Image 1 (tube, rainbow, N blue to C red):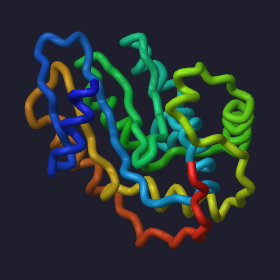
Image 2 (image 1 turned 90 degrees about the vertical axis):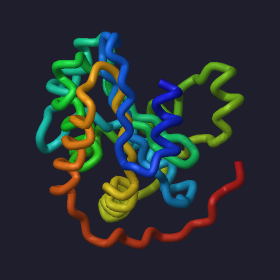
Image 3 (image 1 turned 45 degrees about the vertical axis):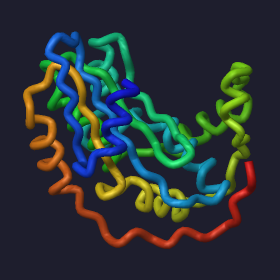
Image 4 (image 1 turned 60 degrees about the vertical axis):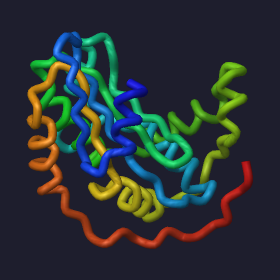
Length: 203
């Protein structure tokens, strides 16, 4: 996994295919580059990330869960300092479906207010292991936001030009790249909105 993400970061292509013909599953990982964000927007983004995979316009959360669970995994989204990683593992026969699902999660997730509040509560009261506390220096404070701010943040972050895709395992050379290019052709977005600038608190 580390090798796949490292390769994704250094490639100029938007898609990196990592061929492992003997692998029992295929890993699909999207790396979304983040702009400079205020502490408020970063906390809101952490809430959004916690909701990803629950529902999209094309795929239900149950469909996404069923595909990922065939490998004993689930779709995961993690916010890092300069990127978000969204990924899942699938059996080789489900590779194209998995890529479509990851694209749908990035492009058209349905974010329910109740889900955001559930994630906010979890982040507020979660007890992290000591090692995680040592590396995660950003505390979480539930942000105050409205629907406009939520939609503007999503439109700013989740854009095709911000995304790099890594696909590794038993895959046909070129198939993942072709599929991703097909999906991004219909991922058209207007110019990103200007987020309100709020000073970033030091960590």
